[in-house]
Length: 411
Image (tube, one colour):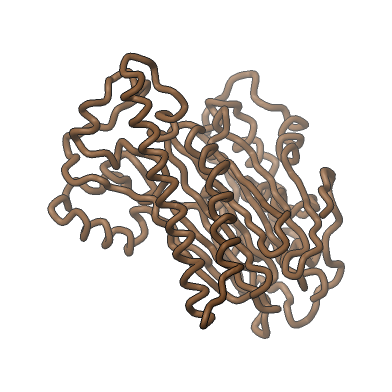
């Protein structure tokens, strides 16, 4: 494995006819025209050279010598200070590759804890499964899927229990890291590559998203590999209404659970999980900023951490996988993301007058730059110039990972 801290060259210099990029197949990027009444910011906004430095500051490319993955591009730009986004990648295991992005909210504590603990729990479980003989492929896939679900639920339970133990042991103290991890929250999106079997598993809790770039006889297309767990997901709405049948009028407000939380699944956020009696016994000083109103709090838990797990067997048509927090999907849809990465692979912008910008060797940086304005310097300045906390008015934390599968550089 080679860790590269400077930009690397694009992987292709030609465009094969079987996978050509056509603007007929993808929607155009939005027109980045900023309204005339855009807000004024303080004089300490970032200058244009500082914006350019910010865009590339955290980019990393890793070249891999594995059976299925040949390169990993990562980048992250914070809006919160400290950032609530986290990410990880574990590449040292001979039989497993694990990648993750974690979108925290309400503080950085939960996201940091999940980033540090969840991947190791997953890898410990799959190590055991790799040494276990299975009668059928289906039973093996089911076992891996169940192990992901168990690890997510076990960790979330531990987060809750440690927080309550902290309250019992220090009832008159200010909240410590265990309690802060429980009342903040985090989405989690993991991609696990089972190298011996050529399988990809995506486990998702929350509203981060995984999208596969597929190139087959029909050209490039986006293959969703996760579902967003929000009130805008009709399946999530149905599930939650079934779990809380007598709360139709109060369950969702402003597309948020009880008007408070956008994701319908997450780690932490225990003020939407603990029972009323438990919450009433927690001293007020343990909620330093806000405490959820119990006015419409009738049948907790309102959210949980159980992931949806999707599985596929990797094929030569699977060229790359994008894992990203919702800061990216606030700006670009799945098709636009795949078009941007595919065009980047081929060094082939779709149109000369396109607003897409092709200046970054790192594919994640390429996506972030185009999400915030591409070649439109005015839009990039509007989105990226404000410093925290004013930056929260124009953008979210954004973390992007692009995982290139073997064959991406030889099509």
